[in-house]
Structures are given as C-alpha cells and as structure tokens.
Length: 124
Image 1 (cartoon, rainbow, N blue to C red):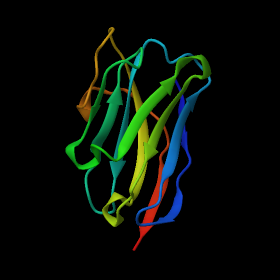
Image 2: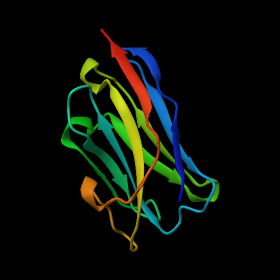
Image 3: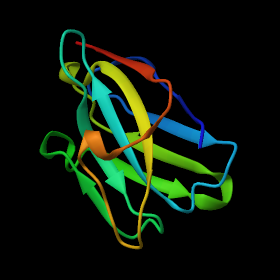
Image 4: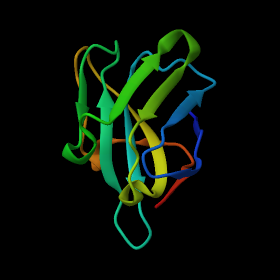
C-alpha cells in the first residue's frame, strides 16, 4: 500500500493541525501508525490505530492533545493535533502493517509500509 501524508505547515504554539495519510488502495487490512522525526533525532512513535478504528494507542507526550482516526471507506488516516508545542516540530510519517482485529503497533521496526512525510513546524 502506497501512502502519502499531507496537512503539515507552519503554525504557532497552541494552534491545531490535522494531518492526513491517504492511499490509493484499501487500508482495511492494515494497522496504521503515525511517527515523527525531529531534526537530529531518531524517528519516534506518535500514535497507532487498529484496523477497525476501535483501539488506539498514543505516546505519552501526545496523550490528551492528539487524536488518531481512520476512514476506511476513504482509505485515509488522520492525526488531529491540538495545543501544539514547539517540541512537536518534526516531519510526520504514516505507516502501515497488516494486522489482526484489535491490534495496534507502536514499534517502528514492525512497520513495513511508509509514506513520505509532511513537515510540521511550530513557532513560539
């Protein structure tokens, strides 16, 4: 499945952004995840959602601020980012891994499909 992330941009601290990750193929069989990579740092887990969208998991640093969701009929996954902080500045990537019902995956090494990232810059 080929993935394309979009929706990044330059915002101020406290603002919101909604990222989208779309595919030309069905994403129904896939557990989906969002990751990010800040300059000079390793790529890190942000959020993941199960195939049906009923189970979600988040990195501690985004809990209560970010929401991951999916629209399987549109082959799209979203990341709603609220109350953005300067430290959220990074390139955000979406990823996919075939999985089973109810499964979420936080480990970066388990994903085998990656999209091009979208840059989010948060200014103070």
